[in-house]
Image (cartoon, rainbow, N blue to C red):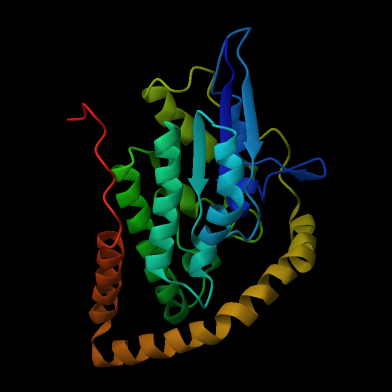
Length: 286
């Protein structure tokens, strides 16, 4: 029996940050891999190429070539939040890169897993004037992911909404990454979609944590060490532009023209998708 080959691409979410095992991270993709195949001769070859901090550019340039070389049967591509946290954010570039990645896997006949994600401003509890611009960017990325997932027939998980977002037990101390329970929730939901499509035959991951949750003091220690580096990098990169966006947000709210910002974002997404080439229809397709 040939093993199922599963390759995961993306950023810290897929790398497993928030779900520590030993000296490293495990994460939702590793948990999902265990349930992709069943039987005494079943085997799953799992490779996690995700790297903390990765943007869509990193996935295209660094992760995709290695993933394609493995010719996986299943590949997950969950990325985009880091793009929204950069002063260089460009939804046209994000759309073009994701189209490249999705199209490359589709050309190999790989089953593609994708997900839309919650906006980081809301998860961090930022003031509205700062959170709204980030939310607008994340909605734009999600709209692109939705459209391209449909175009390439991906197994798509709606992870940007639902009660799990407000359940504090699902999240690690930094409020941006799931804890073990949250990673398990993602694995369970992806498994259900794959099983429903006849693509996962192994047992569903358990939703219950295997390890006790980190104590509050341990979480705060992590946040004060590794977490400060993340904050420092984002502040020097994003903060100046985010403050400018906040000023623009405040000005529009004072004038009652905030809807123009939403319309501008929607127009940018439509233009980005329209600029992409339509994939050639496969012979015999309806």
